[in-house]
Picture 1 (spheres, chains in turn yellow, blue):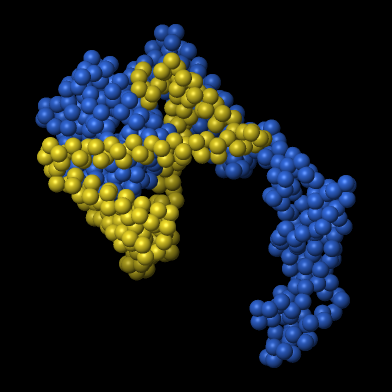
Picture 2: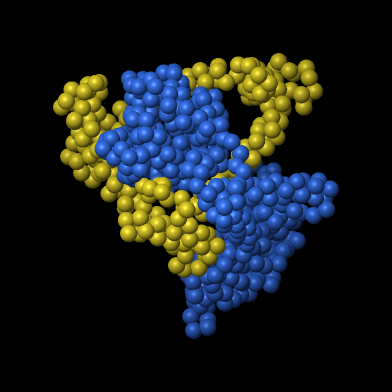
Length: 215
Length: 398
C-alpha cells in the first residue's frame, strides 16, 4: 500500500491534468487552480521540514566542532536574526523602515544581486575554454560567437560600414541568431517536449516509479 | 482625427477652436453599426460572448473613431440597464465580452463614436446607436476544438510509446543509441571512489511540480545505488523542502536496494535555501571547501547553472549535467565534461535501468521524433511551393 497509493494518486492527477487541457467545462477548468492551491499548502507546510533540517545540521556541526563549523554559526545566526525581526512585528514586518524589510532591502537583495553580477566573470572564464579552436566544431562556435558578439555592439557596424548592408556585422549576427541558432534551438525544444510527454506517460502509467523511492 | 478638427487646428486660438467645433455639423454624425450578432464564444469555459457587427467603410473616412459596447442582463425576456463594457478602435468589428456569467443571458448595443479633443480635453462625441441585439447566453463546451491537433498528436505519441512498451515486454530487443553522458556515470562514480572524495548531486533549483526535477530525482536513485555499492559518500543539497523529502526517500531506497541500508544517513540529503542565488552561493562554498570528485547537475536550472558549473570546474571535479532548459544548455556544455541535452535528461532513467518497459517508452519517443521530422520536411516542401498552408495544422490557440 505504501507504493500503490502514491502511484494511484500520481496516475489520477496525471490523467486529470491531461483532460483539463482539452475540456474547458467545469470542474475541469478549475482543477489546475485547485491543484496549485494544494501544492502551495503542502509546500508551505514542508518548508518547516527544510528549515528544521538546516538548523539541525548546522547546530550539530557547531556542537561537534566539525570541519568548517564556523560557517554554520553564520548560517544559524542569520537565520535566527531574520526570524526574530520577522516575528517581532509579525504581519507588519514588511512595512518600510522596520528591521526585517531593512535587512531584506539592504543586505539580502544586494548580496543576491552581487551573486548574479559575478555571473559575468563566470561567463568570461567559461567562454575562454569553450571558444578555443581545438577542432572543427569548436572553431565554428568561435567564429559564430565572434560575429554575434561584434554584431551586437555599435563598433561592429563601424568596422564593416564599407560593406553592403546585408554583409555588415549586425546583419550577419542577426542571420546567425535567426537561422542556424533558431533551428538548433527548435530541434532541442521539440526533443524536450517529446521527452516530457514520454516521461510523463511513464509516470502516469506507473512504469517510472523511482521518484517514489523504489523500482 | 475628424476633418473638422484637422481643419481648425491651423487656428492658433484654442478657445476659438473649441467654439468652432463644439457644435459639429450633422454630416459628421457616424452611421449606426448594422447587423449586430451576439453569439457564445466557442471552446471556452462559458464565461465569454462574442459581439460582431458589419464593417463600415465610413470609419476609414474619419466618421468613426471607435465603437463602444454596452451590455444589459436579460430579465424576464427584456433588457435591464445597459452598462459600458469598453470599446474597440475603428476597423475592428468584433468584441469579446469575457466578463459574462455562465447561463445568464445578455443584450448588447454597439455605439459608433466620432469624437474629438483639443489640448487633451474632449470637445465633442457624436454617437450612433445600433439596435439592441441578443440575447446571448455563454455556454461551457465539453471539448476545446482549437486543441484537436494537440489531442491527435498526444494520442499518436502515446500509441507509439505503448506499442513499443508491449514489444519490449514480449521480449523483443530494442536498439537504443548510446548517450555519452550516461555511459560516463559509472566512470564518474568510480573516480570519486578512487579519490576517496564526495559525490555531489544537485537536482536543480525548482520544486517537485517540474518534470525536470522528477527526471533529476530518478537519476539520483541510480547514482545513489552505485554510490552505495562503492561505499562512496553522496551529498545531495536541495533548494526545496518537498524535493528534500522525495530525494531522501529515493536515496534511502537505493541504499537498501544496494544491500547497504546502514550506510544511509538522512542528512546526506539536506536543505539549503529556496533562494536561487543563495542556493548557488551555498553550493559554491561547499564545493570550494570540500572539493568533491564528481558533481551531477540534473534538473531544472536557471541563471545559477554556470555559477555552479564553473565552480565545480575550478576544483577539478568531473561534471555531468542535464537540463531541459535550452538557454542554460550552452553553459553546461562549456563548463561540464558531459551534458545531457534536452530529451536525454528524460531518457536517462530508462537508459540507466535498462528495464524493457522503460526502454520501450524511449523507442516510442524516438518514433514520435521521426514523425515530426517527416512532418517538417513535408511542411517545408508544401509551404515553399505554396501548395498548401501545412503549418495551419499545427497552430495551437492558447
